[in-house]
Length: 209
Ligand SMILES: [Zn+2]
Image (spheres, rainbow, N blue to C red):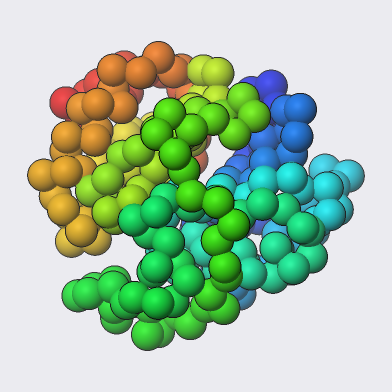
């Protein structure tokens, strides 16, 4: 589904949505659960895309439902795989999460990819701006594409309402709140989370403050 110009929601990845930005270079935001690899492939095919067309894969954070297909996609595409420097060791499987995250990582095993590039301060990838937003994980990022906030797991949506991602999954609850307040200062109209449907209207985001 095209949310707005160039921004595609891969509906078959429901549960942990993946977005495809078809600007100058095709950019994939997150990669979903490993069990959904064939859904990812057919979603891209439906858009007339092959894996090798993807130029960049950006991981918003380390969680298994976001990095699940990163290794396989990289092998199939030659895309550049991006993450934050803070989440990189977890994505690469060099460090393990704690608490609930450790449990989830044990239940849902992934093939750990090798990160090609980490974000520099003020990083832009094509027309996308990387917005550091720690709290859910130490290196979580959102992405801003014109008037679209690709929110990762900073927030979730349900029945048209936006809410913070749950505290029990936050590596730092206070940092999560701070990040929400900082991101609220940005200019955007569409809010596209991984969990829940995209919604339109900055005011929906402001209701959390
Ligand atoms: Zn997450």
